[in-house]
Image (cartoon, rainbow, N blue to C red; front, side, top):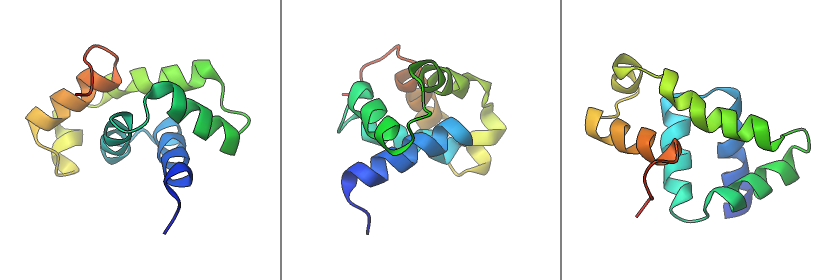
Length: 94
């Protein structure tokens, strides 16, 4: 099992690279534990090529995911809406 910081970094990098609904759901969960600044710091330590702009773009890219993407990943419309709102920066995690 990976230590929490390594796992968090991997999840952020996966969301930046793939941007799949499951990646977004994982980052959503991590935001409740770490916050966006800590997540960025962890990911950028693991991948020194990750820039703040790339990280912010990956957070905003969640908007391109439509209802079928979330449904195919087994994520309900309500949960998808909450994840989208939080990751896009409009709503606090708690």
